[in-house]
Amino acid sequence: MIIADLRKIEGRRYPAGRRTQNLAGGVSPVQAKNFAMGMVTLDPDGGQVPWHNQEQEEVYFVVEGTGEMCLGEEVSELSTGQIVKIPPGVFHQLSNKGKTPLRMIYCYGPAGDVAHWKQELAGTLPAAGKEAPPLPEGAVYKQCTDLPEGGPIII
Image (cartoon, rainbow, N blue to C red; front, side):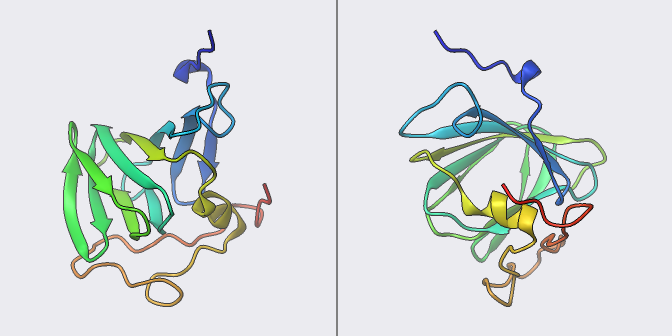
């Protein structure tokens, strides 16, 4: 039996103000072919999963907190107990609107790497409105394209 314990998974910090802990897939001891899953903690006041897209179908389930969810041309509030489906190829972004951390679980399939993690660490995320579609009208939080402290990280 292989068990991944969230309390023992350090995870990785990203420049957009979040920590991602892989529960299934990635560096987790639990591997699956059909899906990947993890916990994301967004920092208060704007921590985010920045504007990106990927080939996999995905869902976000908010365990705690309130965020601004941008999905394609739509923007909506997403809060504790809600889930959002993200179709393959559609640009999306989740930003924390609250004064406390937002915690959410992601699950996407099929399993495999998603480019935006490496792009964010390298400072090469496609910019909204330039190399990527613009954020939807009404979005309050801009896409974070900041580099990590100390410059790009190559993984």
